[in-house]
Length: 309
Length: 275
Image (cartoon, rainbow over all chains, first blue to last red; front, side, top):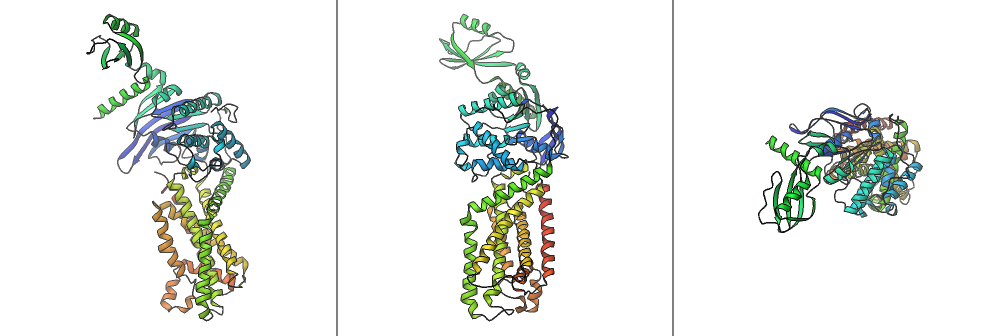
């Protein structure tokens, strides 16, 4: 069964601003799925429609086979949403924030208290349960939104840039939590993020949306294997001021101690090292310039934009 | 941070049916509890000022000025205006509570907590209206209690008194909700109470009997819905009214049906809350 099936989804704001241009998307149950795209691509619009926060213009959306138009209550009961912007009552203390949402989802008070305690402890917020939400730090607010989205134990969790503005340590612990939620408890997770290493580290499948259209969709590993080249930064000793020509590698001088090298797909890095050694350049270490998915994404989106122009 | 030791479990591939009646019952209780907790938490802003206002009205208009005014409809002036002052508190507080609370939920976007949950729009409307009624009736009760310091009136028809108060608070809570649905700024939720509700209340027979007015203004007053509430409530307490009691009930119920239908329709269309 698909956790999410979208067919021909369109959204037009006003008379001519087409935010979504008939997208089709399927997310299997149990998947950890990334929805990527530049700002204004249509990610948040799509999520808003799935969660009944935005009225669609055309198309169908099914959540675990529940049509959001015909069986919207059952569809909504299956979804937990962590939105991009903070959207809780800042004057409400942390614990009642969770109890309210549990109540809106039909969970009896006693059970709601038990679940709220569980998730607040899991997300290190139990000590803050009596604090007003406005008194929390940015990272705590993000975690509060995750706890709130989980309190009714949805089968599909949608996170719209959940780690934006969160420090690295908290981001990593959130990754671990989400991964465990997906792998051990079977919760289907859809993630939008600007941190593409996040998608590469967590997700099995990915769709890339740009200008309201899905421009690429598939397994992360398959998309990465289609990446035409990878860029490395080399720490060097004794490289010349001008970049050596070592076809098929494209080399650029970054500064006195660093070179950037584009390595085409299928080319051996050993071959690169050998050629550099022959050119009298000693490599002391190397690293990826950016993560591979990010490179793929940037090339894809810039290509789409160039075609659009 | 870990998800293990779980309450949460892998579920079967089959969708679980949900009991919509139970969901909406619990959701309704949750919304009402939340609304009452909200105005109780800020009681210095929500409960005390309207009670003080009412005391000032009774002190100035009823005792100081009223002592120089002759009987009205056979009652001391202070006794005549007390039902209207109580009703004024019910109207303003029911309206303001829902307008302010629902608009805040829109402004801070936490109305989305409700919109993404399986709770029906009818339940949302009923929940917010019940919260507004709770505040309106609480402040009305406090004002009624305080009025015992100035007047010794007792309801002649307690059930009618209570019925009119409940229906009036319901009607103005619905009005506050509709105001909040359309509002785009805090100015939008203060304009109606200042420029519509207050004039209608003052001109709705709180401080006078419309029988004192020239015939044109008597007829014009009949288009003011507040007149029917004030007079219905006054009938319940004093046993006298400018309007037949069943006319009062009919007008209030008709407005409730109208405003309720408008509120549900707006919610279903997502006006002011969905893009």
